[in-house]
Image (tube, rainbow over all chains, first blue to last red; front, top):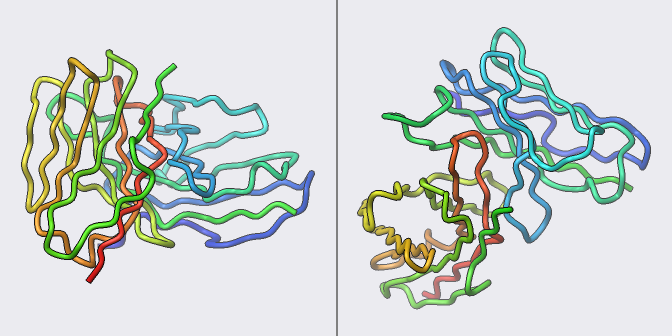
Length: 117
Length: 111
């Protein structure tokens, strides 16, 4: 079975541009989360979506937005790129929201590495 | 806000020895913790988790210990192998929506 897939794997943008990153969750998973991982640091939570609704948002500016489609895939959009947006953007999926009898395990993709020049 | 930190940024061990990676967390409301392993160029991979109503959980060659009194988490890897070389992150959670990750410990296994 395919894991979480992300595209593109690598991309280079210049300051002020816009970027769209895409994620396909594991088949059957309805929850998708986005994390930003700056080099040398742990992942930082950006968004969680479940059943096409935003269920959580991290401490990121409004330049960051996301959405989830009926097939549970997701897009992360970043406008007006800054040098500091250079990072590995990770998408993670899990079957539901978690909690109760479910584990909270997140299944991560390999990430999209964004470089802003 | 929450903060998750690690005591050592880099840990070097001899192949076959046991490894212990430590993590401190600050949010006493966190009730679920996960250890992830991240190899170079890959996404984080789940290792083991523990809920706050437990103080120890064992997996295959790995054990997680939770000390809620001092808000400390540790990952023990038995008989460390070269394939264990990676960066290890602990993550905490209290509502299953967002996880807070530490900055990671790099484990180097010497042959």
